[in-house]
Length: 94
Length: 318
Ligand SMILES: [Fe+2]
Ligand SMILES: [Fe+2]
Ligand SMILES: [Fe+2]
Image 1 (cartoon, each protein chain N blue to C red):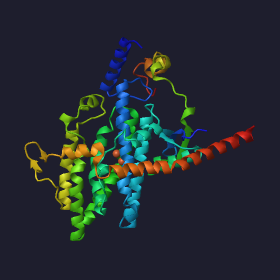
Image 2: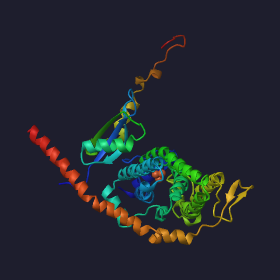
Image 3: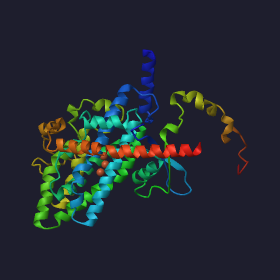
Image 4: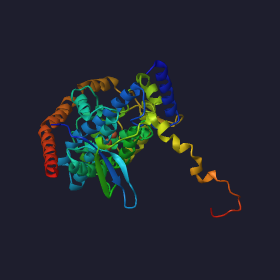
């Protein structure tokens, strides 16, 4: 049996209408304790209205050393941006 | 990796820092950058945690419910600061267990200021005013440091620190507007905390061999002496408002430089405390290690409970 408490990532919605944002991490024995600790550590001054916690080991992250291959396809498709299309100045509201 | 590839990576890395790009945990970084950050961030985390001890000493004896609630909230904040910093440090690939172990075996250091005793209530005022004041100066300078998780932790910490300093100064103000005995108590606290607070900024620049490298990595944005001067310049007028005097006969406004001149720090004392011979080094470590060891059964029980719950859920599902 593992003795050390696992690591959890904490996401907080600061107010309704905004997305949850990564706030940090903490150790806890289980999800319930992770939520309670997250409340005590990250929302002592009304920083949040909703908290998500997820055990860090379940997060799959991209590798920055492969950023070239990973994000290059987005860069060379300039036609996805409005500025790619040349229109006469007289055209308004577009 | 060939040596040529390594040099190339290092150069790209230095250029990124030069451009003020943040370094994130999974990015490639030189081993020395990683190790230096683990050392500095963990030392900072340990300081937040050990820093709770001298103040915790007064929670049950605070003179009013208002003071007690404020002190309790402040000490709780320091626990939070420790946690943000440990988390930032763990992203560099070191475990929390290992970090604690380094603290408990004396391998890692924490700020020497916490090896001084808090013998009167005025010490709680002086700590908030001077020690948190000095910490804020250090920490504001670190909000733009190059390592992303450290910079983000600093931003959160700085937001919380300003209440710490204000509550300390308010304690001093109340004592200084009180009876003669109360004012004397405030003066005595200032006398004892002034020099150790100046020491918080570390050795003089000429005796600080890592400064150049740390400045280059933006792990330091200002030198020890620059930060110390900033602290003296901002604190002297605050002492004047309190009506108590700073225990330094050489303290004098320098019209030409636009800064205060101040006397020489007792560096012998500084190194003695760093080496473990301060008034409370032993007591602090005993309290810290004791708390960790006596809490072991709680941590184990919580883990056993969590495992039991998981097993129950699995059994139900199958
Ligand atoms: Fe703090
Ligand atoms: Fe701090
Ligand atoms: Fe503080």
